[in-house]
Amino acid sequence: MSRLLFLEMVLTCQAILFDLDGVLVDSTLAVERVWRKWALAHNVDPEYVVESAHGRRSIETVRAVAPHLDADQENLKVENMEINDKEGIIAIPGAQELLSSLPPERFTIVTSATAALASARLGYAGLRMPERLVTADDVTEGKPSPEPYLKGAAMLGFAPADCVVFEDTPAGVRSGRAAGMRVIALKTTYPAIELASADAVLDSFAGVNARFINGSLCLDLPAT
Image (cartoon, rainbow, N blue to C red):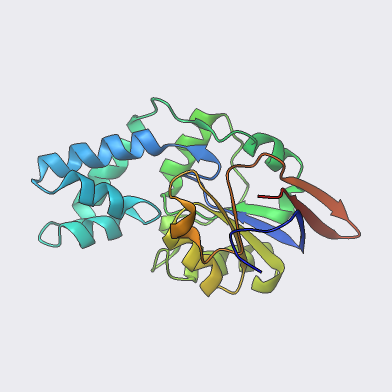
């Protein structure tokens, strides 16, 4: 069965791990504004920097696009710029409804943002921050390494195979699959062709429903 074309599907799992930017929160314009401004200040190609930034920890982006700079120092600058840029940051349609339908102990957020930035963006978007989440501060290797999602599953107390990931970037999809999890990708940041390794690719949360039945989560996914 194609990973991109499928009939209506029901996935059974024990927990759901959500990426933040591009999955729960629409921050694309803010992310691009900040990285373009940073790139121009350092005479680096803005398009290359923006393309490199999606789905990765900012410190890893700096290391990749400007290895001659002090990554720790530049990372702090970028983080402060991102925290202060809240224009246009809103919840992804359907995110609030899906989160509200889930038992709090059965989901978390696994993000390449720092805890401070994640908290700021969730607040700007009007979404409640989970009691526990995995951020850039909690890992030594960011996505596409499986470390972030493995930590998320362990934190919730479930085996990786019992978890489903929602992602929007190729790096995030690779991270979830490398962790041994099923991955649902949203076409909010990248086209479907670049998310082809996901188990399913959706336009949005429209038609996605979660039910808690006999101790398990059942995810209804729409036909595409």
